[in-house]
Amino acid sequence: MATYKVLDGADEYRVEIVGKFAGQCVRDVSTCWHEALRKNIHRQIAVDISRISGYDTAGKSLLCEMHKHGTVIAASTPMSLIFLEEITSVRRSPAVLHEAPKAEPSTTRTGQRSTAAASGE
Image 1 (tube, rainbow, N blue to C red):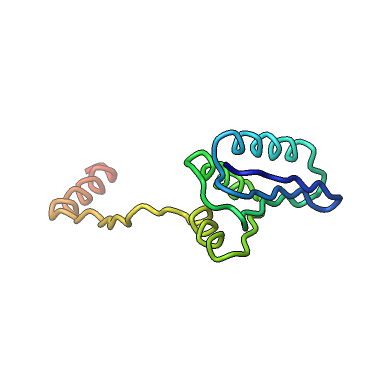
Image 2: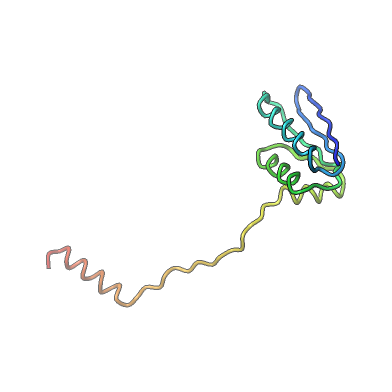
């Protein structure tokens, strides 16, 4: 189970998480983060994950949401840098090659008919 500490400064609101980010700690940090967003007056909001040992699905989801919202995710250890990569990487779907439809031989004739019809013939 993780613990967290909130550092509420004039220029920055920072949440430091220690341990496995799961369960009640995720809900508590979510509440703190949303409260900080409501009160934020030109302060940076940051979450320090340097000392987490892992996270569950809800923990990862919250960290991803925070990152997408613009919260700075701080990481300074090799393991936390791996977590940071997981949190901030964008999953891309495989590229699909789309080809333009091939013109049929009758297209030109149809176009000529349309032109002829438009000119009153």
